[in-house]
Length: 464
Image (tube, rainbow, N blue to C red):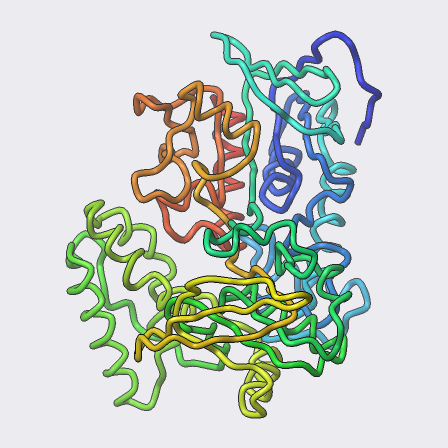
């Protein structure tokens, strides 16, 4: 892997990948493995660590576990057990298919299989890592010009935008606190949370997976203070548990086109499973291979209705947490150290070193006042691209090269990962995968989905 100094003249390559997190690295790995003719891939990433992104960062603690069992986390569609085999080869002999390993170790795995792909690549197949940031692009009939910081320019025939997850949006009601020293802008910041006093009282905005990460970090640092966590529904991720395999009970083409009827069908199946001594997990898991097909069959108005009313319920049942992590949360809830609040923040007022927060409770509609030392934003990743302060995405929207998906999440894409422009036309040069396709596919952020997309996209790039 090369890392050349900046050049004054444009550098040419057949394929450029913008983004060196999990999805971008996986596309690169598949290209390296599949290419049978000389190929130069330029990988543009502003961070020094490849393949880790936010989810698998090396600074994560051992208590930050994967949310999927080890036996299902292989990076290749045809080898779901590859990660487990890698663990055994690298000294983690006690790992089992049902284990939940630290996420930073998964980052080690991704970096290792990248090195293997580089070594085993065919003659003339190369990957060049460019530690830089893409600011804008310009398309021509036979090439894409990518403009980087400090004047560097890349010319590529095809470009993959592997953006991954963007940091949490700042809720409007606490937006005025962005520069307040006791406001932690992102629950993903292990360093910021580590500096919180162990006796502080905290308000966490969000009750999903990001909140779980923040609470686990606090626990690891022997935090003893009170934690309030608030979200509109006050729902927290469910735990993984052993469940029986359920039969496929729904065909996407024959499924109800109204979200209430679809939900009723699933609910009836959960009741049947419960009657026979099984639980809901098997029902949810059997939906996984057809979730995107079900989503695409729904009219836009029904997708929007789902996002407003049922999306949060689906997320906590579909994206579950390791039993070890669930136990930590349960103990904190029982002791009262952690309190989950369904409701909305009405206003915040800084009072010296503390913040007075007014909350309207969801069920009672009563107002509750909380006096806390710090607020932590754990609202999760931001896939509302129209709201991002990102020069590249803003430029793409301005040029009409990408269009926000009608659901408001992600962008419009074709089935092969090609990006649709503002006129709805698929690009022959610009492609994407993962989170940007969430509006089209809904389930498009976890390893099992991204590894398939990465393989298919690599095949598409090499064939066209």
